Length: 274
Image: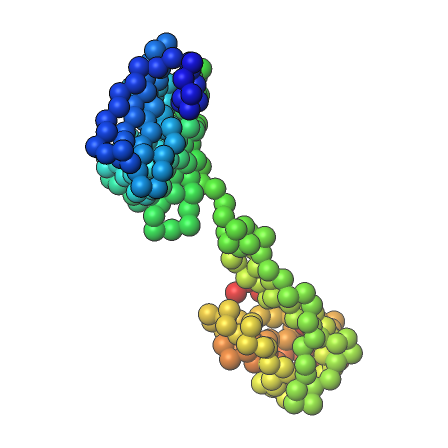
């Protein structure tokens, strides 16, 4: 029944090492459990009892390291991403990986294992891609690598849309229905739409408007197309248009009259793929 004894236990085997009345080292071994405690007297006073760890104390501790000692990711070379015999969980970095989803074989890997079932995520070091695969222990098959969609890819899939914007007319051109344009994309494929109705054109090669820079930067070629005009001599006629690389929207000619001028009705209703 020691006074000032270690915190756990009533009786101890005590080892005392003394070099002077003010310098002393105590080692106390619990006579029942075998737990070991130390206490040191120095010029600052007693350090207080501290328990030492023995092999038996750590036998139940997890022995698989999750990081290197300095906290960095564990790095494995030649790791087989689809090894069904490996029962360990893993979260680290691999180089020269086997059975990678793409030709990039270095990257970060997260692997979860439970009773034969496996989930593995692989993120190549040089891109934004993330791939997932899982193993079905009952069917004994991998479901196959699947690429996760990231935020930027999702934005491309969802697309962009300017909505209908006014197309400002120039060079004295007038309209009975105000013309508008619209630029939108789907999966990074852009389309340019027009709507509106112009009054008659008396001159060929008339630039009616100029598109803004946000549309011009998407153009990779001139866009030539036809739109209907008024019926003449019981025959449907058409106008020829072009969108130039510099953004000019131009009426070029018509087969309504022999001089290339248009009819009274000149719709600009079309959707073009850029």
